[in-house]
Image 1: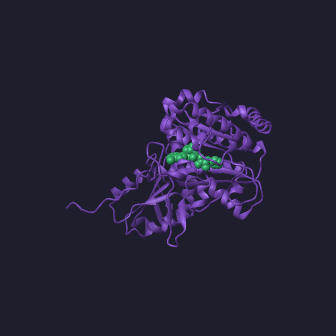
Image 2: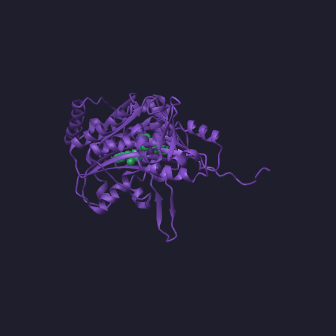
Image 3: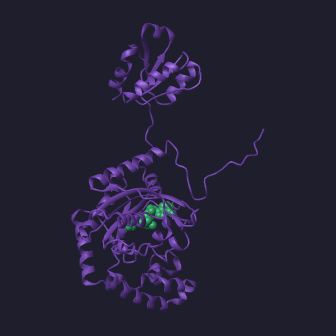
Length: 419
Ligand code: HAM
């Protein structure tokens, strides 16, 4: 009889990650954590929700704050919000705990943005990210970009392009924003209804993908022409450092990134294999004033975030990081009541073997089929005659050879053959 119970589904814009695909996630996260350790970054874990004001600091005029935040009042009437990105919470933790600077940390975290879901853009997405807080040395900008570039390279991705730009310091940017706003006003007709957005944040228009604005955007004044001497020298140092370690890059004067906190160096890695609107694989930049804005000490800082779902799309497009073969070393087949299998498995797993079994009283043929479906290298058969003789039958499933091994030695015997 058909059930009239509702089948629940994951909320719009969210996805379940199931085995065997989840094994790719583990591989990617493992590769990132390994690289982070080589670069001297420690894992940081901040709450999934914070006081709304912490996240609001990423930019009053950004879509993330204005339209996309998952905010709510808790039972104690506190206004909280789910994390939309990793930087604000990390800087809040820095301001709160005041660790020794530079504080070099990495994270793997879910983020929530109420976006229009499409391929590569979700309402819950995961980021691998890193932040280095407490130094304005351009060497750290180079290290940060090297960290991410090498991560993509080590995964096997080749169709990745790096764009860099400088947002300058506060004075350079203020001068530039004035000039840019006058320019948008001259082109108010093209911008139409969006002129109000240009008035509120002139930089936001620069990274628009609207086809009808592209000519006006291309001819807009460039921030690089308004950099102070100090900002220009800092940007030069970053470019020289990247060249010295053979990291190819393009200077993209219109790269301004999506949050208000950025200062000086900004960068983005685009995946050539990803579709146009979602081609940002990862990106970041300096945010030298955010710590102070969070009530912390003055602490220049830089970081990046890289979306795991997009990374997987890029991996699929380039056929790298395949789903790893899932295989068990040993499958235990019990022709008795199944309780001996539990004891043998306990021993095998304790000796480092990947071992599995069937459950319930399955017939022997079905258990052997389950063993081959699991890709087992060995089948261990527990049967009354062998049990009485103190042995177990072991079959090598690659060549069908069968031997008897003393029950007492079985874990060691298998471990030495499966290592
Ligand atoms: P973001 O550019 O907003 O920067 O996000 C970083 C990366 O997260 C993007 O390049 C993209 O791969 C992924 N991403 C963002 N939104 C979505 C989404 N809705 N669905 C799927 N993937 C997405 C930041 O979040 C900054 N906190 C980066 C940073 C760290 N800057 C300094 N430190």
